[in-house]
Image (cartoon, rainbow, N blue to C red; front, side, top):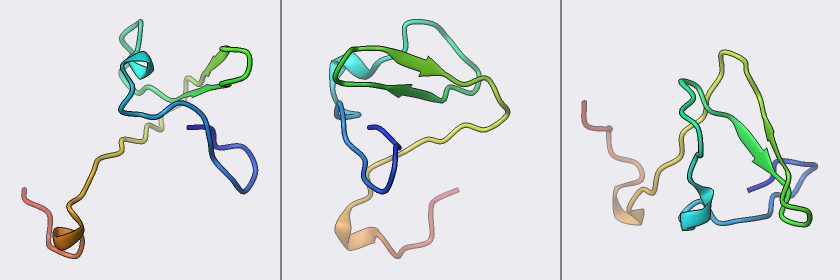
Length: 63
């Protein structure tokens, strides 16, 4: 999803089209859904998202 402005949007992260074509140790990609262009950022930061069951959202994560 896009991180532009106050609102996000774009392709769902669960979509098969959201896979990386090239391996990157710390991937950070922002794609525009309107024209299909992606911007790749090469810094030391990387963000990973996951789905948490609503009933377990305040549990201590497993190690």
